[in-house]
Image: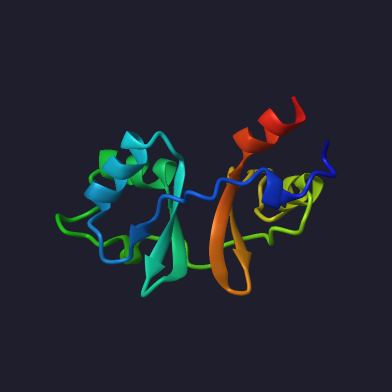
Length: 129
């Protein structure tokens, strides 16, 4: 099952946030939609990603001033994958792309520079179960 193509498993209805959105509203959007990460968009292009873990942690610690925009706190070097890759490829990217044995749990799917989907660790687990 790990040979299945990402394009057959990925979520195509990607919930995104605009780069100038307030971090509080972005966090609320993550929680409302029960997702752990959102690509950040600017003029129709993906320019970053935010995670519920990062935003929630920093909001609890009161590290953001009122009105802090998403683009001030987003991860700019987004690790992504193309839709023609396999689930095995996605697992390898999720595991090998960050230090300290951390794992990426959401991978934007980008073809020809365009965000076309997202695949999560949960999507992969469902596909191989």
